[in-house]
Length: 442
Image (cartoon, rainbow, N blue to C red; front, side, top):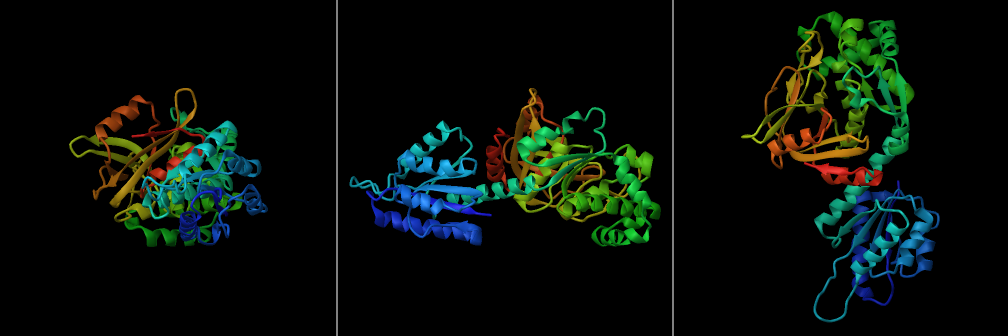
């Protein structure tokens, strides 16, 4: 990828001060993106210099900095070549306010650039104000870089809807034109029977490696009948082979009642293990939930929790998220296998999730008019034992948990949420801005 630093300005301001900021800005870009950072050898103080630098580049993100004031023609020259490339507009602080000469006038240049982009229909640019040494600047550039990477990864994958959406769970049913048009990914619809027939066709020996890995990852498997453990290994191979053969990194899969009635073993543990393999996998056929998992996992760098908000404690300021048997083992304090709470068949995940100082609750959903929107809330995961049979995580909200629940219920949010084990609120804001999805913070 190319993260391109574009420092624009004119030579009539204080070039000694500007040069110092330029060197520090280049160093910051290289520290964040290493070899993926593309920086000019000098400040771009003329349109000719700017065009020469841009020639031959293929940027994934442009960090457009007013090293000094630059009129709108500079930004226009960038848009002429890279109108569809994400832009982070960076204003430098005025280094000295002493009643004497204005050294940089970077802020006025930012207004000129922003005005030009808006007029040309590019309203999804990001913005940050500060010096190269400021932590907020570093965080903003890094967040935008991560968002662009996640967006590119999503566009390179296939999303699979496996099986039909259960009655009453229509909120998770995906539309191929929306998946491709907004997210840039390809959606395939696969009958669940195709996966089940494949699983039934394997021999036990063909699937043994998957069973060995499962047993070495989780405890409690001794209490699960051998026939169900073998059923898990067959399903695991069927799902994994399907993903590998079709470049699938996002799955929204049907689970109940079919896996119990047609196969005899749930796919809870299979989807759990897939999440730790980097394949974002949701149950109950929630494709948009799985997309939310993919985005959050790529931005946080690890597997994420997927489940229902089932309990709120106003005194403790917590919301408990739970699901009946699906959760990546890496999120567990002690990854333990049990049985599904309703059907009493395993293997299913049965544990409380580990604590974390900073987590982010997230969901890509739709409002009453069918327009996309994003739910974002911060908090911390507390050290709690499992709250109910299945997998659970107790999140202490960074705001008011009672107000969060009241407001999100009244806003009509879907009943599935993602809990990412990192503070990725800024990254999610950047990602959603790039796609034009409004963010609702709670």
